[in-house]
Length: 192
Ligand code: AP5
Ligand code: MG
Image (cartoon, rainbow, N blue to C red; front, side, top):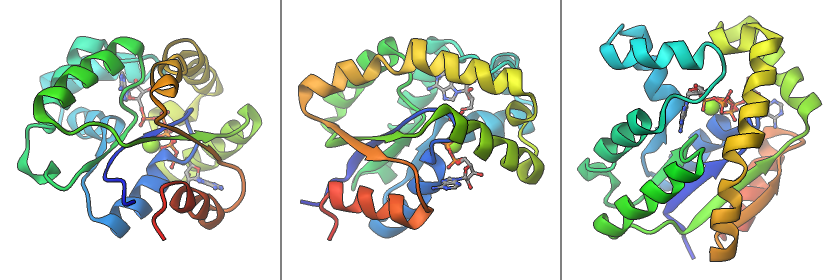
């Protein structure tokens, strides 16, 4: 079965963005990354961007009410008719609960949560490399990377307990080449 309402989940540097791009190119659904949305707002120095920057520079979560409102607005756009891939949202239990209510209203229930698993050592290695290529503020300082991992474990990982009993979580080994990980995701979603 072709799954079209999807969430891609995992710690910083797990490969959510990388795999999301490949997946959305293949199945032609919008890639909705809250991290990318915040970075655009920060770059454009909008009021939302200024608020978000204070949190994202430290590697902490932007407050739920700001993030939920932004996603709710995005999910009201007509381009999600054939599905969506949420990347980096939800990442707190209140966000997961709010998302559930939004999706009930628009009748677009999640079909699968792709949970990409990597080790902390791999996260540091990947983000240190990316810091030299992309210049993301939150990659430059190892303390900020550490706080992103801590934030993930404390606030985001519990979302899996929300989705697992609903039978939605597909655990994916995120180590290995980008192609190997994509192959595992494609198999888990039955894309072949
Ligand atoms: P966000 O942008 O979502 O950052 P993140 O979760 O820390 O994750 P990354 O984007 O760093 O990693 P990724 O998993 O996408 O991996 P990628 O594919 O890039 O969030 C940033 C901030 O915004 C948050 O800290 C928070 O402040 C705020 N925010 C966002 N969403 C929020 C929310 N819902 N609520 C509140 N606040 C929110 O890969 C990483 C690197 O590894 C790349 O260089 C890539 O090329 C490389 N790579 C990928 N796969 C492989 C592989 N298999 N082998 C080797 N290298 C690989
Ligand atoms: Mg990302």
